[in-house]
Length: 264
Image (cartoon, rainbow, N blue to C red; front, side, top):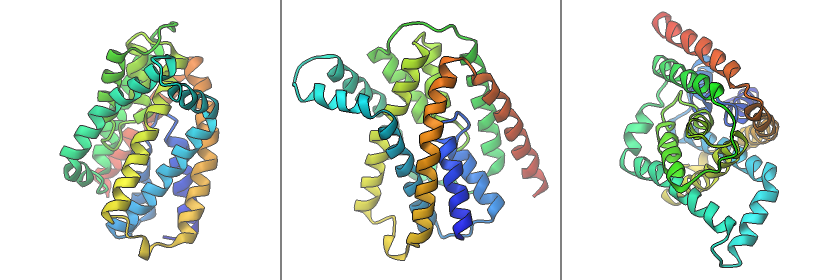
């Protein structure tokens, strides 16, 4: 993988991790366009590094919230921070279960099937359109909501389904405040990313000994910087009900991907 390719894929990951257009789907489309011929282990390592970069950017953007949550937990009381943490844990359960039981089946979907990615982008578009039509409220995320949002996050493991789009849309459709929905959506994925990275490191799947650290570093920096920009921007867009523009974008890219699959 060339340095320019690494930077480009980092930019794609940084923006699409937070913008509701499916980072995994765009990475698959990006690899197809660039003709990425990396062996599976190297490709997985690069993808994991990019996800770690965006997880770090999330922690930076929500650093005040993270500090408050940690401070609240250290008090060992059933306070607001502890309850929020419990909701995060509840939201993680569906993705953890699906990820453990169907890991091989999910990995098989990341093989350059751009028609499938295109179809899932159309599903994302429908979710975004419906959420954009919902009225804003002051309702917080409940434990029941957290589990349902977690199911959406599990479904979003499919390439082409936007994780942020699915979780935020589900939360908003459940009647939750749009700002709180975005905050919960972005924070709930951080433990999963860190857990996945830890699992891959312990299992040796990343094959770090054959890694090109220059391209990894360039991709990481690009994804981190773009993640900071996109995360901050997305919070504002959700509050202002601007998701319909991303719905139109997903429809356009989805249709192009499906059409291209018949021409390639």
